[in-house]
Amino acid sequence: MRIAVDAMGGDYGSVPLVQGSLQALKERDFTLVLVGDEQVIKPLIPANLQSKVEIVHCNDFIAMEESATSALKRKESSIYIAMEMLKNKAIDGVVSAGHSGATMSLATLKIGRLNNVLRPAICTLMPRIDGNKSLVLDAGANVDCKPENLFEFGIMGYEYARAILNYPKVRIGLLANGEEECKGNEMTKVAFELLKKHPNFIGNVEGNNIFDSNVEVIVCDGFVGNAVLKASEGVANSISFLLKKHIKASPIGIFGALFMKNVFKKLKKQIDYAEYGGAPLLGVNGNVIICHGKSNAKAMKNAVFQAILAYENAVNHNIEVALEKFKN
Image (cartoon, rainbow, N blue to C red; front, side):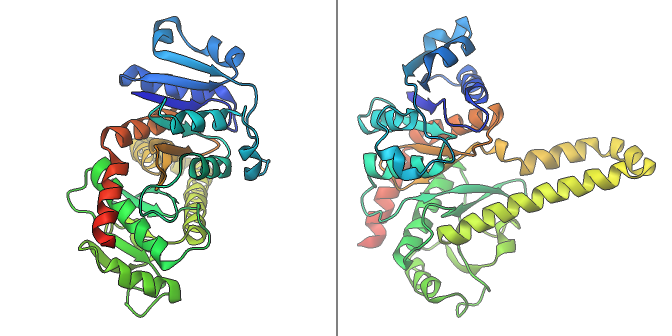
């Protein structure tokens, strides 16, 4: 098994990307392929792991402020080379914390879509009150969708949750402005009828259901999904900030916080995006994990684990089989 990591694209440079990838290598048996500047990468690899690491040298990478379309012409960039390797089956997965638009564009155009998939979707994991995770898709790949796209998102999310998260029961919900079947816009109302084909579809769900453990897969278009994702991150950061502010403002609060240290630690772990690693790009004919630009070493390690699990559990094959079943 060979997993490639774009070692150039993150907000904080190559160090956390390489460190996290090496941490994954210590826990799982695979060949790590690091794509990027060899002069930067090689000194970061300890002698005892060098036999399990390959470096594919390149100087270029797509910066965050650049246009996603520029990646199509930059054949010497790290993400272009990684996608070319995936297309040619030289590797079994790509993990990137670089320009997400460039990653999505190259994945779609270079390696193509799975059979019966009209649009790929970013599938992001969200924390639930029961300690498990829910899946929201699309989280930003497609801001304009058709009902058929939402139907495919539901099928892809179901297969990913079943294979990777090992949930005994996976429920699919359609994000709307109310639970009643009559709620939603014209697109979601048609998508509702399409999703009825799936026995695990439970109908419309609301935003709070993402976190309350009443549904495992939440389907929406990329515009709504990305807004939900960013709002959730903002709420989590704001709550953390306010807790620290009010605790520090009172001696009693500081004293009480000492007894609550383990509680705060568990809460931080549950809402920390680094625990989930990255978001799979479902629907492309390859194994692609998109990470947060600010990913630290822990996030990269867990993103590599996601790529490994997706490969081992043949997620793409399962998606193709399921779509073939429901579209016929």
